[in-house]
Each structure stands twice: as structure tokens, then as C-alpha cells.
Image (cartoon, rainbow, N blue to C red):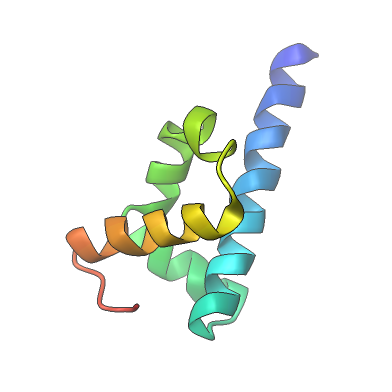
Length: 76
């Protein structure tokens, strides 16, 4: 039961980041998710959850934008 709860926390956090990323860039969540998937942002969030979830959400979105730009993204 503990593993499921921990993974659900990660899923909720990633979902929140997708929505806020989309709001910041004027994208619907569907397109924000697609963009993050294509440029490694979702994997970044999953791998770095332990550090990123402790930061303010604005800092996490800034990190996502920078990471995606380094991996071929063009949105700012």
C-alpha cells in the first residue's frame, strides 16, 4: 500500500506541473503534456521528484522550461 501512495503523490505532482506549465505558456493541458513528453520534461519531473517537489512551483516550471529548451524545445 505504501508504494502505491508514494507513486500517486508523484503522479499528482506531475499533473499539477503539467497544468501550471500550460498556464504559464498559454497551452491547454493536453498540449503542455505533449510538449513536455517530446522534450523530456515528464522524465525530468519523474527522475527529480525528490528535489523538485520541495521547490516553489514557479521554480519547477522555470526548471522545466530550461530543461526542455536544452532538449529541443522552443517555448519560453
